[in-house]
Image 1: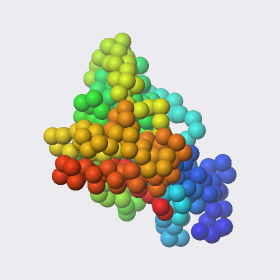
Image 2: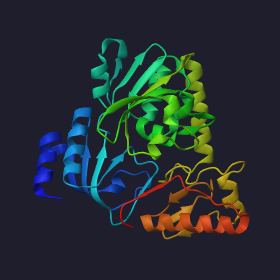
Image 3: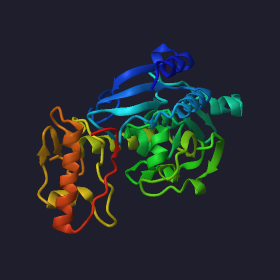
Amino acid sequence: MTDQEVYRLRELLGEENVREQEPMAQHTSFRVGGPADLFVRVGKLAQLQDILALLDQNGTPWYMLGKGTNLLVGDRGYRGCIITMNGNLEKPVTDAAKESPEEKAEDLREIAVEGCVITAGAGASLAQTAQTARKMGLTGLEFAAGIPGSVGGGLVMNAGAYDGSMDLVVEEATLLMPDGKVMTVPKGDLRLGYRRSVLKEIPAIALQVKMKLEKGDSADIAAKMQDFAERRRSRQPLEYPSAGSTFKRPEGMFAGKLIMDAGLAGFSVGGAQVSEKHCGFVINKDHATAADVRAVIAAVQQKVWEKAGVRLEEEVIYLGDF
């Protein structure tokens, strides 16, 4: 990575949006991870296209970061460029009917409402999008109010909770394809399934997601969100950094129960621990390293396999040098 490349990125994005040796612990929900060589923020489609062209031209590896809620970055960091659409300030909600298609596609953090349809940029937060739906009296996104991820990340993982999920509301998504073309892809072609989508199969980037909701009562919607929030607080170790549910749910089973039955509640390596409150969570209890977290995950997988003959698949994505 050359000084000229860094200079050009700063020219394209502004000095404040390009950082060198950025600690990834500041950008992941585990609060662990070493430095990325480069860390850049983008807000517009044209910016994203320009920097991808520059990075690819120079052979620099890159990774698109949502809000880092299912990501474990190695203690030695990432040798390349981390790109995020998450700015320091949330974008305002706009009236979609007053914007041209080009304007709506250009901003990567905009949330626009037209009738029962919400079109959200991939960099917008799921929680803010859900709260926008509530304010507009639209039901269907209540499940997302407590998910601390981005809309783009939610699409990639087909995020869900409390019997709700992205595949139940998504109509289509705008993607930046590997060949550089921008395409609108209908729901059927997004291949949304349990914690998966086509974006886990091909190196395309989500730009926008269009979601179809239904008319509802704002008070009822708020009450449902409050109920979900209270359930989370009572059952999940929200007081500690984590990636949420660490493992995918095996068919017909619950990962947390399998882990508890294997006698692993409270099991720890260094500062990482299987939560005693909810065994499906691996938490950063006391200044854990990424290596600690990964070691706990591996030990849990091995022990559950030995005890129950079930292979737990982690939801966590590993990135960088461990």
